[in-house]
Image (cartoon, rainbow, N blue to C red; front, top):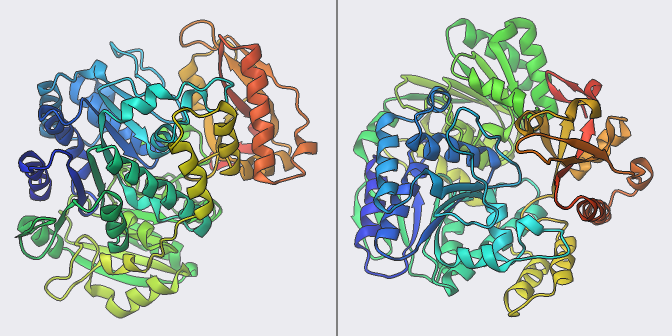
Length: 586
């Protein structure tokens, strides 16, 4: 365990206050996420909480933490051992810490907007708990915030909403809010302000309700640190890396000399590259034995670069993005350690444990750039690493930073040292503003003792179906006839999560066969798929998201009312001709 994680844990053990409030600010790949079970164990031992909720911004990280860290610590399952990059010693520490407070594998669960398929080789089922009815919950921040504001994710658009069960469980738990940089890294300012507002109010609730709260990330700008401290009531301890060790009432700075020396031993070269030179540069690096990570800010460009690279490198290059099915993404991840070039979007940023030699990336967002560099030389055992920022797709802020500091940039240290300049200089230009309309809507959910059912739905409609980002929908690649009598986990492998705008584009391309209700009477087997009668093309000529959401909710209501006991989910079926090995064609 690294010194900063040890210090954070020791501080929580010794801290006098009854309600710990801690910020852990450490570089990518430092081991912050592994600290969560250890902190959970300590807080439960002290009697501060009875359960623990670990929230993460993305479903991919929830999947990784639940399977690769927690289940992997308890279960001797070769599939986990093969695909997960977790050391035996780390898994042993996690298991012993949780067992010490009576948490075994049956008390660990996950919650997010998709199901993890049960592995038949396991002696247990993968446990999803929308009601947060477990001692240790790994969840998306979206699910946590919905339940915190008394919007039950299990019955989000049902006529009945039993919000008190998950809501009350949050109040007897401790919160570990991980990778919180995702709150403020959105390109869209309106979306960023909305997410920031919901997050800020969540912290204020935690403060008022005296909920133990730990906030963690590699890229927390000072402005966000200030907001977190003020929202949690001021008595917050910040634990971070620095040039020298310092301890005060509200700040602990840890100097991890071994980590610092390892970072400084790497020769970092940071340069700006023109888009026209990207393919040539990648081929050159591969020919010299280097492995390259190419990161793009949008899917269309990622696909185009992949196509160009494939002509030269063939099967040495792989592509991954959010419009691939779960099955195809898993195939890429299963061979990630052998691939020479990975072309990707932000799907492999925070929390994804992969490592390459060099990076070529768009520079539109400073938070994304820092997270992507976190996938380079992850074990700090390389001698050199090249970071190339694509000129045409970078902000002026990032181009200025690279031009000014170039080879003196230290991408793995959050402070300046020995003539190097920290990545943290890039993060301070962020603008944080509350969305007053969203704030008023959310505050009205907090104060009444009881909330009318219709009022919850009205607020969801006014917030476009989500308290953080856009409303997401599941699509399945395949035909109606193929889906009956298959295992549910096989259905999940064909799934892709998209937003309303992508649904509209797919309809315009005649790719959507139609909305279907998935039914299941036998455990783990799909028994039928019912087509839902709806004139998609006529309705979607009006693209306003709230009207689309209202239309979708009405379909859900009607479907669940007719098939309440056997309905699993509503999906859109996608014609196979609209899907290729490069993903969904939009």
